[in-house]
Length: 425
Ligand SMILES: C[S@@+](CC[C@H](N)C(=O)[O-])C[C@H]1O[C@@H](n2cnc3c(N)ncnc32)[C@H](O)[C@@H]1O
Ligand code: SF4
Ligand code: SF4
Ligand code: SF4
Image (tube, rainbow, N blue to C red; front, side, top):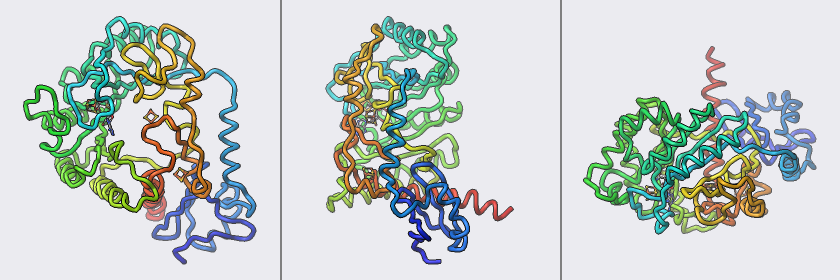
């Protein structure tokens, strides 16, 4: 079989929004609009399965307009009337922090913390507006653990009022102790914590620049990560990558492998620092992209990569900022849509039931798709809002080429885990 997959068959052609991955025997095909996945062994198989492939929109009539198809599906969903209940809350317990990361986008903001009264009123708001959908809380900051009081007050009030909730946390992980981990598990109902590491010990200590540092903060955080997974709380490590720490991050992954290899509750991902954005067409940035991939490859090689790139549904929103089910709550009880903006793009507050629809609409503004988008298999999975500091007018290599490659890798993995296994049995 040729390595090139068959683009045309009878009066049909391959849908532009299908990712093809070559596997040991044939190909895996993934429709990024419907989530459908199929394995094709050879050309005979292709011919025999054509009806099914057409039904799955993997092959489409020659004149088919994929872009219109996806746009119509999205428009249908957007125009559905009815009140959406809010069940996702990102709560900033404080803007204060025990670290001073040189890159932090919150640098210079006033270190306001949520008072006990506001925490109580936040809980009352959630209780008053609860529906049957389970509540999901994301504890955020600043460093959320600098205000454990607020987390306790909100969690206790929800429990006392019979409100079911789960939570996650974004933290630097330094202030975790045995008793906090117990609380996190049994009272805050934390299922997952994301902790950022910037490098091996020395690089980490410098990047974090903790206040009143004693020099063993790196070791404490690594120790805390182990304690979290022992308590059955999933931990994902974010590696903030810049030009300054690529090589060191590779060493860090080696170190993490000595500590956590095989730990099913432990995963790692790398992310570029915001000002390291890579332009898709800029040759000079190719090196940055290669550096990013080097770190990503090593994460995968160590079995630490947890990403699932085979989404089952068409994507309708970018994130919580353009999703009506979510709100950000600042330490002063104001509502925002994006965790990056604590004094801008506010849409209301806990003392008022009305949300500012103009700001909500502003948060949903999208970048116009380019000609490249109309040919890109990621179009059904790509919603880019202008509000997001992580998005630019033109997408980066990491958003596009790298994502397609990750999908291909997941398809190969799926093939090995399912099709090959079935053949063995
Ligand atoms: C502002 S911090 C607040 C939570 C907590 N203090 C922490 O560091 O995880 C939220 C997230 O933003 C990330 N972050 C902060 N500044 C960033 C930047 N300039 N580029 C990329 N990520 C950044 C941090 O790594 C962290 O994952
Ligand atoms: S730990 Fe988080 S909030 Fe604190 S300075 Fe670093 S990135 Fe910013
Ligand atoms: S923005 Fe980039 S990733 Fe998204 S559809 Fe367009 S080309 Fe593809
Ligand atoms: S707009 Fe960007 S930064 Fe803001 S919540 Fe969404 S993904 Fe995060």
